[in-house]
Length: 444
Image (cartoon, one colour):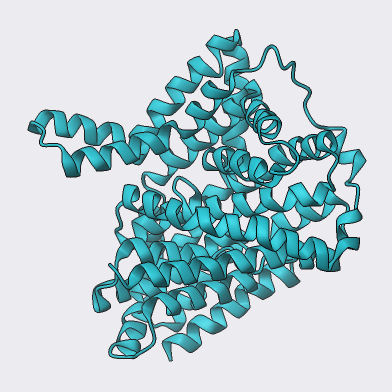
């Protein structure tokens, strides 16, 4: 019965978003109330449950998302992302241009949210394609692969960061393992799959891109933008701090106070704060940008994530309703002793929600409400359940996915060709991620 109530809630959510174009945040709140009533939660307790879900879901995520958005925008506006992309393309050359695009997109994608990274990188990727004389889509597909992988597997992106909280996982371990999963997945999807599609569907790769959108790209003076090393270091600093902290805490005996200081600096909010302060200098003051200019960058970055934060909070409300209504416990009891792997179950539930809802973040958060009790019931690694849920969240992006339309418009594709490229790429990356995570689970 609880699963039927949840299924009906998801159907109502889809109808509200897709049929009536109701705002996603409002739709999630309405469905949370309907599902809570259906699951028998007392009417006097529904508001408390929703408030608890929103509060627990956002919590320190507001800090991480806000600081992450500021960091990415500082790197973008200073020309750091521009420098990374074009410098790597020049060093790798035409024969290895896919690897150059993957590396640039992966580095930039760690610091930027998916849609922001997509809008930022697409004009730069077009520049690379024109400079080396290859089809624009041929260099666009590796970019999409890298951005999807960072979005699905690596904190501080919304879904992985929120899942770390939901599954009570260790951020540093998720980051380290996520990189080990994401890199081979991107290399397979971004190079081998891309080459296969290029040979099977050459007509799709003949599109020249949307010139009207390309004209809006920012022009940078190559002599005035930050150096390659400084740009890469600024983007990777939060990752380096979190990884270094995990290694130091596990391998180096430290006095109590020193360990506390290291832990503070390497926590996700602490690492992001230190990185933003460094970016003030590296991407701001060092580039002779005024504080007024830097303030405008910060304001724009926060404005970009305001609705995302509301949606994430509402997704947390729906998740809490499922937990309070006993859905998670019901599923855990249903599959306790079952031969079906909890990893496959978490991935499958997330895929269904992703295909239906479109938002990878909402899909992941909603699936976490169902799968979280399985972590305790089965003893599965929280790190792996975070990553497999993230893998499911990038599967099969289509017409209800904003990235689908951004990709279609920039490359001037029709709907059918966008399905053949964007949708196929996300699905393949998700399946590769599931396979690799399943292999890792045999040893941990």
